[in-house]
Image 1 (cartoon, one colour):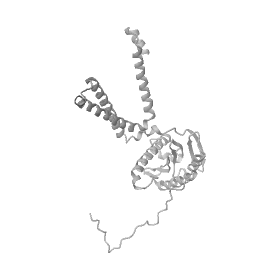
Image 2 (cartoon, helix red, strand yellow):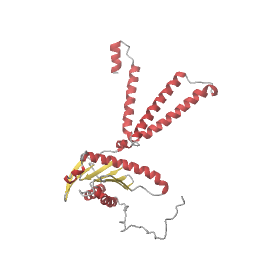
Image 3 (cartoon, one colour):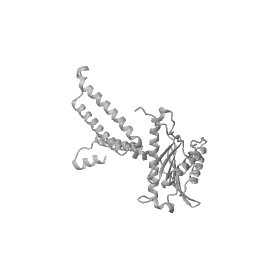
Image 4 (tube, helix red, strand yellow):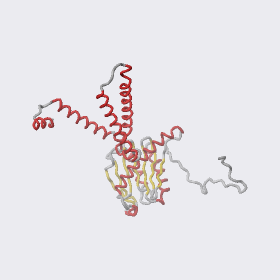
Length: 309
């Protein structure tokens, strides 16, 4: 409306209500597109692929009508209408394809999982257990079962081995607890702060869960069940992703490479404890390895069997 008034005032044009409404409609449409794109950012790649497919179908139909319409129906589309429509669809296809390629180069859309992360824990508490100063951050309200799960996680973290644990459900991270501010762990921090590591662990945890879901879909035909444990063994420490129940999972971290196995065992016990709070049976019933393993010695007179290759 203001643009139309300025045009009338500066250039002396007649005031056009229809043109003003057109401008308003375009702006409202762009605002709605921006709003919807912001809310569906996590599903945007799939929606863009769907839009590309629809655009290709429309182009196919238009091309068929333009090419065979005069012969089959003795009718034809106006050249201007056909040309503008094809140009618009082609520009949309090129821009969408370029955007999808950029996302692919960034890592299969994984950076965009933040869009569906949900609210982050903000309620902060601190607790001292023995020699460990434990940080606790939760959502404002937790259910009774979630409070019990939080208590189990707090009882497991310490400055010796398991340094960070976060619990996720379908809405995002419900809580996390860690000892990253402990003075004994300062030698593990070189170029990052404790808060930067917390944000990074939450993001990587969502990415590991996304990868686990992709693996589940691949393994579903084998009857292997869900992926319940993923360990990313790093040069310095390790990251753990443990499946708790449908839509629920734990993310754990140790900064000490020497304590990877100990922290892994603590995570397995922690999952069973949390499952009990939700009236679920244990799932990580692992036996310790036997001394010497299960190697069968080969007699000296027996050679290696031929593989047939």
